[in-house]
Length: 218
Length: 216
Image (tube, rainbow over all chains, first blue to last red):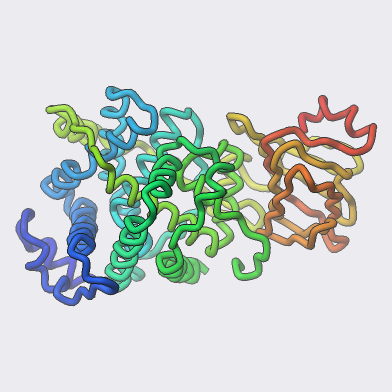
């Protein structure tokens, strides 16, 4: 299944619309058909394909689109985290460089591209602004025979769209506190009262992906 | 492996790990536990997804400089940084701990702290301390309480205290109110990772006198 998709991707012009890709027709959106969430889901699924094109073909046009979308967000995120503009500019570029070099490590059954970019930006902030090392868990890599199934990717993207809807539905004050936590403005003790987040479904989905990886390792 | 773990990390620690706001020693504890525990890892990666939401949905983004894309492509053309190959985890030390020990369990530089108990302080920056503890089979760590939070995770063997029994991967979270005497199971030597954000307080005179020298 993956081979078929991969070929379709490589054969197509770089700037083609995702709706032309045959495998996208199978996509189902669970939950409420909110337009915004639907847009978001499409966009995120498209970014998955962009990262794959960078990984497989060093596709600069795909990278340019990712850059245009994410670099200003990374820069904004770093400034809100206490960086000055010059440092944020430099770090945002470096985050995008990391995205390029580590495109083979992105696992779309466990994260959206936005989530993955967030983790790279967060680690850059720890490294540059806090001047700390960032211990990361052991990697649970997969072999070529275990490339992720397209359905697993789509379901994860859908779960993320649902998480997004749930977050958007939170009271404004609570959402602002969560944002503060991620911009580094809350200590972990202050975070303790913010942890009743609706993570049940996405957690189960990620858990399945992790269990499969660990099983493949053993 | 991971379904045997009974004592897990709390949501506030996992969310702070995802947000990137913990002291390095606590990051090391979380990364080590996640290496063994899919349940907490899935929760931590869900908190990463919340971070993805925060990144994506900012009210205002900040435009990059005009030449930013060209500069970034030039950086890419310089080539990928040489990634240090990470060791696969071994039976005692998961990969993140091996990174800090600089090797395997045989490379830990233990220092005796009395009654057969040994420790090795790991090089972390910031306001918290990480150390490995070696407790001989059947022995106890002196009765102590804590000024701040102390997390102890079993890597080898098991221990019991007033709270429960803890085996590989289990984390005990102790705060100011807990006075405990962790005792290693008789079946084998116990190795733990312990992190704290404040010095330990020992409840008997002798250990307290030694405390400044032991850096615990």
